[in-house]
Length: 391
Image (spheres, rainbow, N blue to C red):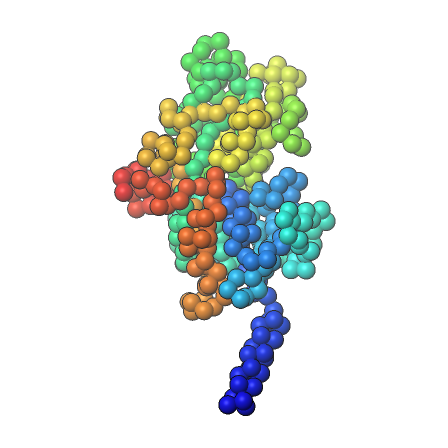
C-alpha cells in the first residue's frame, strides 16, 4: 500500500511539473474596433492572475494592440489582440493573412497594466475575429467560418460642435444624399433657411469597418456602393479647432479611381473630427462634420466633448429603444473563428467556449453592447439592415 501511495504521489508530482513547465497557449484575435473595449475587458476578467500591456495614447480599453497573460482551467494563456476593423478582420482569418501583434515577450503587469510606448511587433495569423456585421457584408462573403452572434452593438450619429442648433436628426434620405455627394447644406437638416450657407461634411470609417457596413446597410444606401467622405488634417485629443480644410478621403486602394471612398481606420478618429470647432479660415467657419460612432465613443463625444447628439429617423438612442425595436441603428456582434479545434478539451476550444458562456463576453460587455438575452426583438434571418421583428 505504501509503495502504491508513493507511486501515485510521484506521478502527481511529475504531472504538476509538466503542467508548470508547459509553454503558454498563444491565441490571436483581430477584427472590430467597435468591440475592442468589451473584448479587452473580457480577456482581463476571465484570466486568473491576469497581467496585461497595451499600446495607446489614451486608455487601455480603447487600445488597438494589447496582450494578456494569465491562466484559465489550469492552462496558461497568452492572448494577443490586433483590432483593425470588422470586415478587415473577417478577411484576415479567412485568407490566413498575418496581422500585427505585440511580441509574446512584451512586459506586462497587473492593474492598471503596462503602457507600451516603444512596442515590439510581430506578424502572425489570428484564429478569431470580432465583427459588427455578418460575413456576407465583408469582402469574403463566402468565407467558411465558425461562430456566430455574441451580442448586439448599437451606433448613433452625431454632428460636429460647430453645427447649427437645428441639426438634430438623421434620416435615411438625408444620409443617402450626404454620403453620395459628400456634403449637404445644414438647412436640409434643420429646416431653417438661414442655415443654407452652412456646410455639413460627411466623414466616417474605411471599407474595412463594420461600423461603415452597418451604417450603409441600415440606411439602405448599399454596403458596396461608392460613398464620398471627407477627412481633416488635425491631430491630438478632442479639443481645440479643426485645422486645414476638409479633403476627400483617399482611395481605398491606389489606382482604383474611387476618390472619396476611403475613411478612417478607427472610430476615435471620427470622434476627434466631431469634437472640434470650425476653422474660421475655411468657409468662414461655416462647416462641421457629421458621422456615425459606436455608443461608447458617442457617449463621450456628446456628453463632455462638444459633439451634438442626433436622433435617427426621429428616434433617440437608448438601450431600451434598441431592445424594444424603436431604434434600429444596430447590428449583431459576431465572433467568427477559423480552424478552431473541435475537441472540447483543446485549450483553444475551451477558451472559445468560455467566451460564449454567461461568464465570458456577456458578463463583460459593459456599455459597448447589449446581451442577446436582453433583446425583445431580432433581425429577420439575423441579417444586417433587415426588418426588425418581435422575438
